[in-house]
Length: 217
Image (cartoon, rainbow, N blue to C red; front, side, top):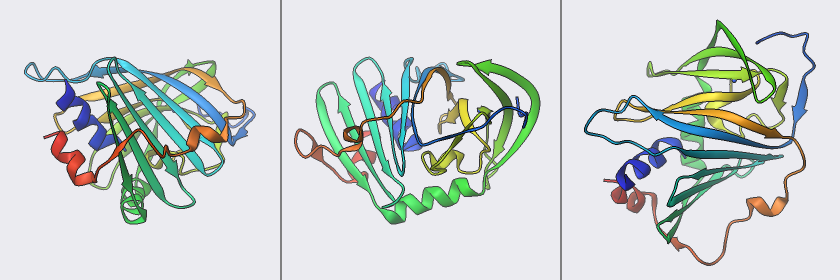
């Protein structure tokens, strides 16, 4: 399972109706349930868990919680940096991605084309439109998004920089052909404390992204 978790880590780092009132969102906390699908019989994949997305101005944070593993991404779109924190069975690691790596992922998703489909549904109290995203390499994934909420910082999650609203259900694909489906269960638009985005100064062993990749091999 640990190998599947690190594989997921390396590949991660939602009705359209313009009559609905739109809210520009600066601060938010969105909690998603995570379910793994499409794994092969020889690959147990990832256990169910939760993903929590935080936003505050140019800063964002993603917490991914499994039973014994916690992954946290601290994203600063102004400085174009990402800090990843990993707590695996009590072993704590920190790794950093600088401007070059940040812009590389941004470039990948800035070419994404979202095509609206016929399906709509309500998620966490919001009207959502289904769309399919297509990347430059031909990869596709589905998303349900709401136009009732529009992020002030479009780069809070670079995967959705071209989306017309905030995704409340989406897929993350992995190299083994499986996927994780995230579906929002709550949306909190109250102010998020700035301390949530602080990078810890102690308690974590800092490693390179190359060392992290070897841990998942």
